[in-house]
Amino acid sequence: MRRLKCVASKVIFWDFDGTLGYCPEGWAGTLAAVLAAHDPGSAVTAQGLRRFLNEGFPWPTPEIPHPELATPGLWWERLEAVLSRVYVAVGLPREIADALSHQKWLSGPK
Image (cartoon, rainbow, N blue to C red):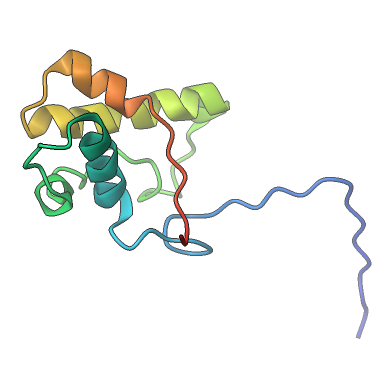
């Protein structure tokens, strides 16, 4: 058996949603947490957001190239549009939805 030696000076770990890491409530939970931080009295829940998260993400079609998402800025611009659309679908004004969708949240064990 032949062994290959790999020496790398830089490594990128790309986590697909739910593989290396996860958020128990997923994208819906993250959106609900961002909204709750903005408006603690909001009645919108992760469950209420979840039904609007069925489209717009690029990863359900990995066989289709996405050169339009080739930079971090383009990637986040696309995702922010998806997230903003979800907030609008549950009744937030576009201006607030856009502002909340621009926030980057990292979550992990507390």
